[in-house]
Image 1 (cartoon, one colour):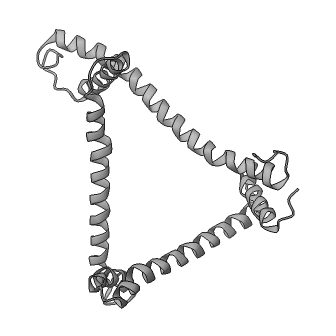
Image 2 (image 1 turned 135 degrees about the horizontal axis):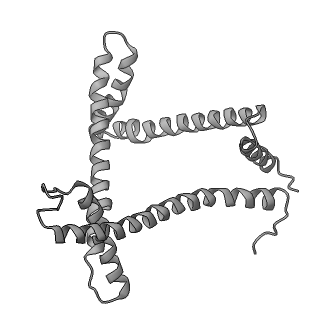
Image 3 (image 1 turned 180 degrees about the horizontal axis):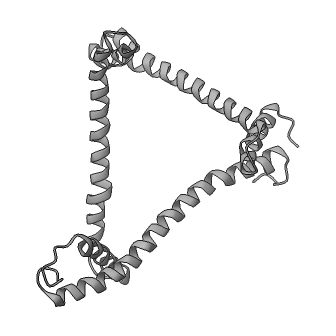
Amino acid sequence: MSNDPKIWLAAIMSLGIYSYLFKENPFFRVCEHLYLGLSLAHLAVMGWTNVRDLGLTPLKNGQWSALIPVVLGVLLFARFIPGMAWLSRYSLAYLVGVAAAVTITGVIDAGIITQIRGAIIPLNSLNAVFTLIANVTAISVFFFIIGSRGENGSVLGNKTFQKLIDKSALVGRFILMVSFGAVFGTTIMARLGLFIPRLKFLFGDWIHLIPPVK
């Protein structure tokens, strides 16, 4: 086993956190509080480092444009002063606006533009043909759900087109199920990607059951 006290501390903390899988216990609560305390301490240090490097240091060097984010940051604390709490709304509005702009831009680029660009490809391979069919059938599911139906129960007044949409939507539902399953599988793999290195630490660095990789 390891003789390093830091490795022992990390191993004990890891076992304490994973002890919750058995049941909640005092050992888990102690490790949880220690973890939260360390996280808050790290957050405080990183916050002060950002204020110093991105705010105070530029002001000291004569970059007066940094005064704007510094003032907005200070105004966030105005909510704790009676009679001046309304000043914090300007900072919150700015933060919400920037976050919304960044989020919307990312969603449009990754969720719409990139998907459309990936679907518009030459049909020169079996993979490209399957991708086109999968996209069309998946989209037809939403058209089947929200599509306008006439009085006779058909889409756009055409029963033949309605039957085509119904069959395409049936295939599309299976495509969506496979897609959602792949997303769920990716989530599970991400969790395993965090769990496996912890096991390698416990069985390798701590109790040395796993030989080190040369």
